[in-house]
Amino acid sequence: MSTDAVPSGPAKRALFGQPFAWLVLAIVLAMVPFAGWLAQSGWPWTRIHPAVNAMLNGSAAVFLVAGGLAIRKRKLELHRQCMLGAFTASTVFLLSYLARFATTGAHRYPGTGGDKTFYLVLLGTHTVLAAVALPLILRALWLALQDRRAQHRRIVRYAYPIWLYVSVTGVAVYVMLYHVGPSLS
Image (spheres, rainbow, N blue to C red):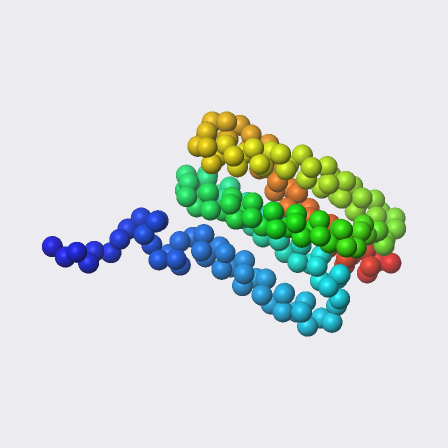
């Protein structure tokens, strides 16, 4: 009997034999052209930084959807990796956003009328739910790491949709503030 048998199982597979690695690769490949375009745009960092933050929010949303799909299929390891990916992207976003806010302050929406009303409602719900999401996410993560699954399931019933909404609306807020509003003004 040969001892050169190919190892099996998720822990023994090559890096690109794992779905999470493909997901990360897809996100990176989607971001590289956009990041290259931003670098060559001639925009100052104060204009590029919000776009980077939107990419981080978008990445968190992709990880969240993938993590939600994984748990529905009972793929616990993929779910864990995706949720840690979402947590990492959201954490880097939050730190980056706070740095941007500390350096450039609040930015007013340049539009008027119905688009401004829509933007303010979107921003308001995004902001309030982001504040609500943070302790829920931290608690859900802690419960998962403690393998307290029943309690984890109870809290993610609320944390997951709120976190996904905040991640998606973060991108929408960016698009409204930096692209739609200026084009309508």
